[in-house]
Image 1 (spheres, rainbow, N blue to C red):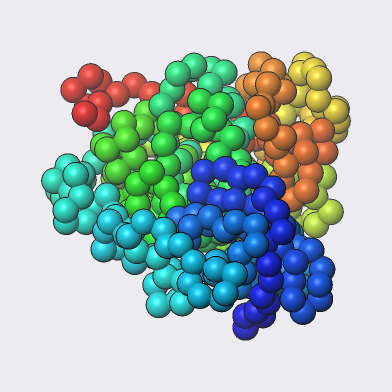
Image 2: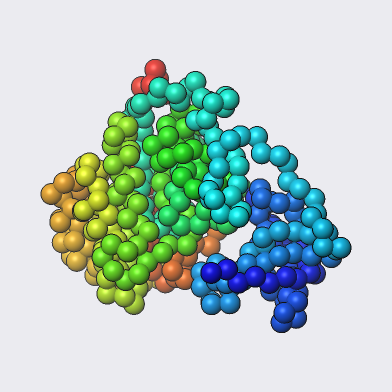
Length: 383
């Protein structure tokens, strides 16, 4: 169900690529609410404009980042306001919803990349880091930049979480910092530098059209979980491993590890990783197992002794994945410096680096291992 509200824009808070934050006074409650408008879907609202809002998740206190979401911007007299530029392509994302968006797909006819992708069938050994949560993106990129500065990394965003990539301020800040070379949105997600139909075609577009040396695949912000074995959106991580392997890539499975999550199923190695990689991923991957026992040698991050204490349990849990996958133990030396140099405040499930260092170190370990796999021969590099 959708809960609608109308209101008037009272101020602009700022914004980033693809999104603008607004202050809106609701007509029904007269309360001011922080609102978010996607400028790929509408012209940016201005103070005084009337707006139609979706407030269902906001009113329930669910994970929309505390936003009312702007559905449409109207002129003060209630008529349709300024329109965004007309769509350039024929791919429809969020299909058959009232807010379905038309985009130009990298792999559709008429695209400048269509001929390049029409018969493409190989990633030529491209390392593909796969993670459960969107919050793994930043530590993965920080580790890559630390170990191999200048690596061209492309983010492939799946549609298990948020659909608009503009919802992610993490992506905007990583790009501003020069850590992210490009983005591809696949499935029903939209707003990337390139749009693609599937994870498979999105990975090919990342490699061949954007020149990726490493690709990272995660869902967008807003993980969905039900506390059951199979009812969580991160199942898609296992499917991404299969896609990367099918296309001759080198999938690197990033473990979701926590020493601070209050839920037992996510302590140590999360059951999400064990299910996605142990049951869904049918192709072998390199599982990056962080050497947490060495965390005591790190510095500058709180709780490192507790991280080291997690090592035996994490190692035992990872062994179960060794039946199908290659377990790669990754040293952590220097990754503390990489994480502490982050240009943005990293959080996962509301916890920052000091609040759950094991999580960020595990994701960084996957980035470190991917850096060692960049060995493409010159004639295999994308043009």
